[in-house]
Length: 130
Image (cartoon, rainbow, N blue to C red):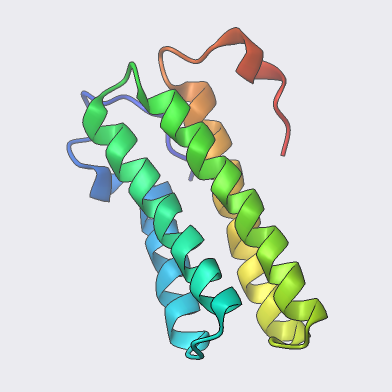
């Protein structure tokens, strides 16, 4: 079930299913990408940024939340792109790529839903597709 953002009904950012999925994705990446390669560090950092953007936007309130959902969505795209780099460099296998890529794609969709369902979604955001 996708989030319908109503800050009055959701008491904490931890209750957002998008944040929960971002946390699960981040945990999985940290567990799987144990190496210290710069690319792995960058991938993990971007995953943390998705979680942080959702949390920060939620805490700032409904007026700012749509923009933070945009930031989180953009970071999901960056994460997917970095996963392609890791795959092409043979740092991860196809199965690992598919697992994390599909999670990042779904999380990006959740961020789009949150962005659109926020009470102050901007008209230019309505045409965004993922």
